[in-house]
Image 1 (tube, rainbow, N blue to C red):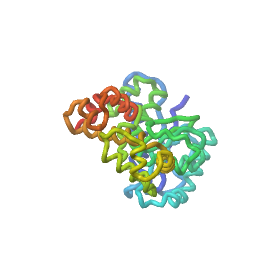
Image 2: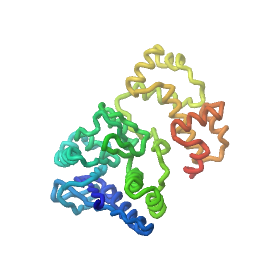
Image 3: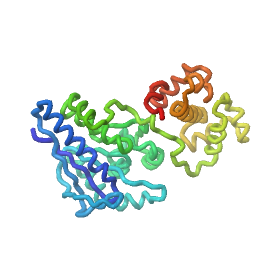
Image 4: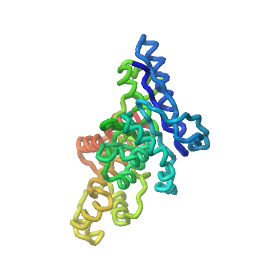
Length: 323
């Protein structure tokens, strides 16, 4: 059995760091495995493209070779500013999308990094599959690709030979998973320590900042959210909230749900946890005081809700993210 062939698909505007990030970590893994006496062949990595010349985001010119058969094809993410015409950008990447589809048809395992998931989805590989992407663009992705079962809290999702990852540094979570499968947990653990990469992450939930997520064309729900944000500690009263907006409770739930996919109460919990995260990061207040400030009289109930939203207990979160 030869080395595992890993190809990274470069294309105009892709992030150069995401092109080289996984190959660099695999190179480290090869040295770690050799130091541990491994006899198994390592990795054969290449940067491939259907184009002869590729300029990455930031103006970096990438050295590429022609697309060829590989065992794993990695699709990096790209710069996605608010003003970008996504339809036009993806239409200009037809050769890359065709290459992704062709590789998948030949049995290659396809992996996307961050918003590289858009290219994989355009190739039709995510329909009916579970997937993830950057939390910042998850809502936009879900609205565009309704046939994809999106898991926006996940770091790495693999479904029937197609793997998607969360933003940027999640490429290392994937790489460590690949190393673990190819070389075993001992090599993966050693590689993580050499590279100072966290090998125990399981969710991107602790990093989500809902205030940064774009919200367009949802005036009703935005106003409701603003009202809830201004009264985090107040007792949740759906009838009173509906009266403030001159609608029935049924209409409140229907309109808010249509625009957001959730309920005002679910949003309130999210907003309270967001505020609690800030307090845990920046103050010395006790957990009970933090819970009370964001509307939870029972610290135990607060802890349970915090865990559901972030995957970590408040005390663990503070230890990790304290500024």
